[in-house]
Amino acid sequence: MYDLILKNATLPDGRTNMAVGVTDGVIRTVAQGIEQAAGKVIDVIDAKGYLLSPSFVDPHFHMDAAMSLGQPRLNRSGTLLEGIALWNELKPKLTFAAMVERALAVCRQALVQGVLHIRTHVDVCDPRLEAVRALLEVRRRMAPYLDIQLVAFPQDGYLRCPEARVNLERALDMGVDVVGGIPHFERTMDEGAASIRALGEIAAQRGLALDVHCDESDDPMSRHVETLAAETCRLGLQGRVTGSHLTSMHSMDNYYVTKLLPLMAEAQLHVIANPLINLTLQGRQDTYPKRRGLTRVPELLAAGINVAYGHDCVMDPWYSLGSHDMLDVAHMGLHATQMTSMEQMEESFSMVTTRGARVMGLQGYGLEVGCNADMVLLQARSTIDALRLRPPRLYVIRRGRVIASTPEHRPVLQLEEGTSELDMTSTAYLQQ
Ligand code: FE2
Image 1 (cartoon, rainbow, N blue to C red):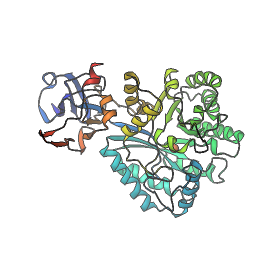
Image 2 (image 1 turned 90 degrees about the vertical axis):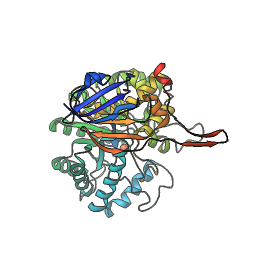
Image 3 (image 1 turned 180 degrees about the vertical axis):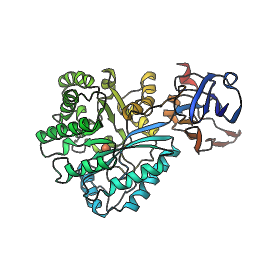
Image 4 (image 1 turned 135 degrees about the vertical axis):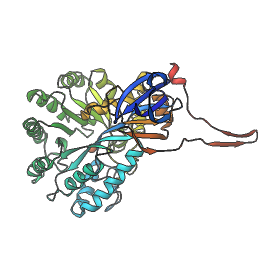
């Protein structure tokens, strides 16, 4: 007895003609062909050979600022620092209702793109904690559809902002899930390191994860990630700590990186790169060549470190574009990191699915028997085909129930020799 069977699906590992049977929101069967998965069935979706993936994961986002583009003005320099200044102009004017409305709008966009798990930072430097209240409300309202983790993020510096220390603890008391930080925005390198020590201790005492905006600059000497790794080991937080951005690693001395990577692996740090944002924010003071401002993704992966991609921003003071499509993010990431071999492109897909789930510590994530039936059917023939096309999400399924659907994209070509429908998909990558 199944509530739902998806038949004739291709899975991310390349298996074709697969059927996935779901009961009570949980995957009960994953089998070749429909026969083995048969029985009494309430609903059947024919996947027509298209790719069935576990739902997309965005482990790094800023939902409190999303969709605020142009309020109160645009970022003229395109830099991180002007974005922070602009956000500070808007912060006192933020209202609970407007923030909930904007956040729900971006959540709806995420859902139709098949993103069902988001870790969002929430600024705790506003003494009213309006953003925290708003995003707790959004987390509650979206819970049936979207796993939302909140990170207490002291945007103006944990030590630099006078209210941040008290407010961060207040936010955690209110139900925020993860401890955040921004050491490269503290007044000095020493204070940045001190902030990591203090934040690590809070995470250890409260039994929480730590996710730090770390070294988001072009400064080759910004080495807070070293402190983050060392503190993780000192406090026994291995596997619970994430370094977000790490763009300074792009500019670091190669010899130093050979020492740093094993230290990060020892601490079992997770890393999140945000290619859409950091390709545009970084390198703004460079003439030519301009640095890409992305951390060393293939080298981190080769060192055994879990790396995922985040969307970071959608239409906010730091980034004017975005539609919360994690395939856009992976597409940009694989170009910027030159991860273009077949294996690396497949890995890029995992960086917006399974690797992001590991960052968030999601339980029951995946397409195996016993996992939550959180899935997306893409109009593509393989993971690489999905990256190439960024195609329609035909069905988005949350706990076994269809919550969003998009018609197949079938462009019609009208030439002299006749009219035809074009199938843009390709099975070529399955044969490699
Ligand atoms: Fe961020």
